[in-house]
Image (cartoon, rainbow, N blue to C red):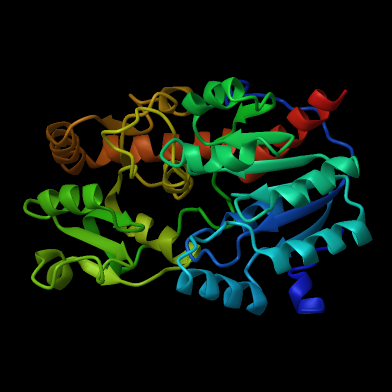
Length: 364
């Protein structure tokens, strides 16, 4: 088993079933895993690579971050009024040379929007199947679809988007939500500086600011993430509730374990009732009690009466939070049950097993 961290450094569903499924072992494969290394808040590449290695596969990793020439071309394009094409020419050329040299059994891209149509046609001509795990559905479905038609397999974090992909001609489209990594998302000792009634960790969005602003009027709320530049200078969240800046996954685990309630709200709240984000699984993996806005998939993944609490309105959220803060035993029991389910059914190893099984079954 081997892992090449970055060739730039060496040269510079509907078919998902999360409940107690025993998957057949996959034959060892050489997998080329491409990741958008320039995205600061997407650590899933590390979790996927570790899972694939643990499953016995040979993993090569390619970092899609743009080269200097790509950056200069993009800057020139902006000067000339041309929009950014999500395909870096120099980086994709390097990727095709890497593919030619290594001849992988499978090409797997996380997000995959930086992989050019030319590269995907090259893979198909070479007989190497390509797969994309897109985790920004449904709110970026149209963006994904532009590239999805060129992949052999597309895996989406939204069950509600799968049929839309298939209707658009992406035959091999499947539901595959994200997951937790037990090496990172685990119960850890709380820290006093992270202690709170309600904790949120993640990027800013208008709906998150709105809901947390309401919660902060009644509860001890802590917000972790790069929010300061987005908030108005007079926002009460800055002075009393925000710990600004990016954080590492291990730090997030401690934040969750130090809070009584972990607040989760999808950025597409109020727009789509399907699609689940990584926090659903990460908070559960940390053994935290979680309140999350209801999505169609959640009852298929967790028990919404005994493991996670789902709200649909701000009023629901307040009722659930008040009740949770008054009942330590019930809150801790739900957190423990969610943790057990997360480790039993929702780790990155489960997801990589499922992905590879679906690829192999479709190719038979």
